[in-house]
Length: 146
View 1 (cartoon, rainbow, N blue to C red):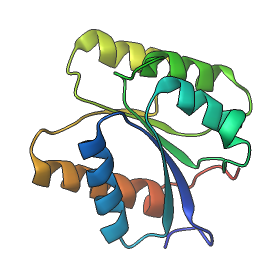
View 2 (cartoon, rainbow, N blue to C red; view 1 turned 120 degrees about the vertical axis):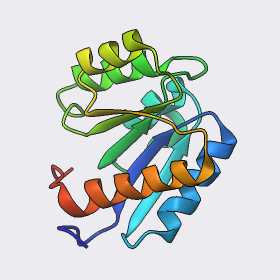
View 3 (cartoon, rainbow, N blue to C red; view 1 turned 30 degrees about the vertical axis):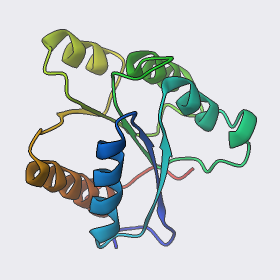
View 4 (tube, rainbow, N blue to C red; view 1 turned 120 degrees about the horizontal axis):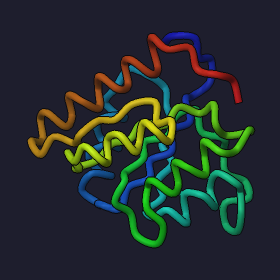
């Protein structure tokens, strides 16, 4: 199980309920111990990360899966805030989005996203992507300790 003796804390920031369910299923089937936290908009994401309001006891994520097109506060703003914070900027942020627009891709990397993945529309492909994410980030990469 890579270099983890505790579950990997994953924060999924996603407003599409179908994509949330798929992500939950894919990570549940995986071989790695992980705990998936889900928030559905950009404001909840920043509240979770800075432990505000109902998220005062939220765990520190080891990995963030961030959609760009979110209600209340978009993913670009969330990414910018994470990477501007000295406490949070080391957390790897994977942008997982339906956007294929070059400007979104360039902007995400300019804001220091760790990777940019365009969501496949096909179910099997989406599950394959999530499994490869899980294998790479939980098994191969050494994550900074919280």
